[in-house]
Length: 179
Image 1: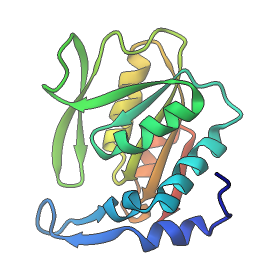
Image 2: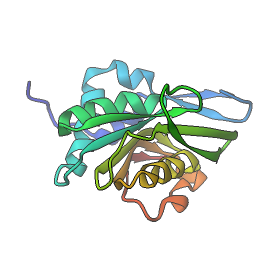
Image 3: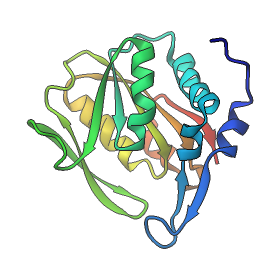
Image 4: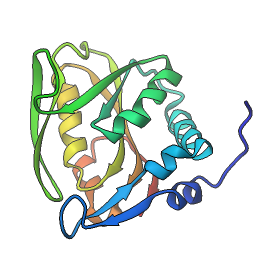
């Protein structure tokens, strides 16, 4: 199937809705489910991530729980790479590495299986939204702890006003849109 060129920024922003006071008062949640339900928009997002990193060798794509899984899995498929879930604490059944981090409305712990990556593997990290950068920073640290190399971090949307990029200056950060 041949896809028509689209204005990616408009396509994305038109299909992400704001949900005020979710999950806590004062937070405006960026709901990507309308984008995911639109085949053209969803395909354009996957194609854009793959195009940006297409010249690089990628062995694994790490998706951050939970919405990052949705984008990361088809990206991994397109690269012929493995998919690795980065999960919240207590969700993985085997031995894990864990990392604590702060986010805009609390703190959290993420984990990855200790055998998810091998030293020297090239890993692309994918998530839906970059806010304060805490989750992305923790994920990059987990990947590096295994001896793997972080090729880059790709996000659907960056919330620029939260300055998360400032915590990630050592990463090749690619945001499809910034608000």
